[in-house]
Length: 311
Image (cartoon, rainbow, N blue to C red; front, side):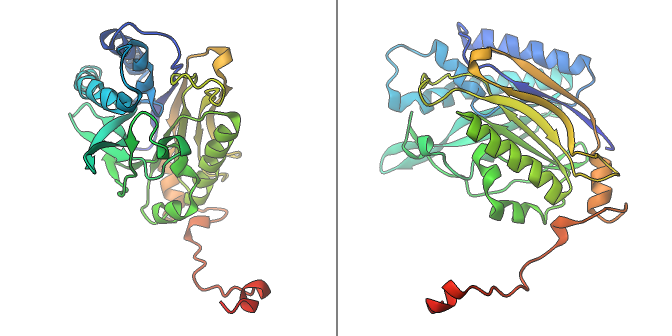
């Protein structure tokens, strides 16, 4: 595939929906729009499922939130799979808590992203690092994933990296050796600082790995933590900065949106040049620089502070 077209839905998670059926109807309307535009994929943000909390039982214990979302997710994924096949559009359904077994008799969950395809395939990726809120067990015990999954999709090599994971250079040094055509980052950032960290890192990774990086964040405060969570979201598609691809490395972008704006936008990113990026990355087209191919393992470090400590 030379180009790919992806819709990135910066979903507003605050509006109340009466039940899961209504949420799925609204999602299918978005999928149909993507299909009508000739899009190959619709992407939802991290914890898009949090909007389901608007119809959660009033007496749902706080520690059971993850379990309740997991149960709803098992139902939703069946319907989303049918949508994907019906409309011929792949759907990255954001992230949904997924049961990861018990620890000391207490249920645990991973924060799992799902990509469903018209062919009936289901690909998943677990979040590899935890935010302070997740680590504190808010809504239930969340545990880290321990696997990077490379997905074959439409002839492309794809990986899903979830929100905070975008910020860790050691992870991306591993990804740099995988010849990835497309990396998708579903995110949910509480404040503009988190938005800037995730989106800035995504842009740098596109340059470093000479590949396409799509990043998407939700808008709104579904967990009711308005003091610390202003729900800043947006969407961008980044590429290498190279005359053969893009002068600024920004293929498409939606400016950061706050909960106060009450927006609910879809970024339509058409004709993303995955083929041109692949040729740059693999030496089949002249590149100005090839940063991902540089290895620092041969360098010695001269640091008087370290040597004085005897290390």
